[in-house]
Length: 76
Image (tube, rainbow, N blue to C red; front, top):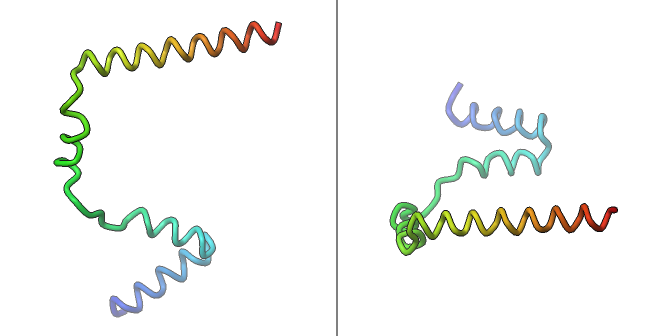
């Protein structure tokens, strides 16, 4: 089989198994991205210290616990 035939049969198998929408969603998982993720990540994260991240996680946990406690109190 030629690469073109394999490609066509592969897409047909995906379409048969997943439907058109599922096939598209599957294929999109393997698209090449653009840009430089490592450079971008440094721009986002270099401003934070480990302590900043720890404090944010702690804050989220406290908010979550308060929300759960309020839900339990409302249910009583």
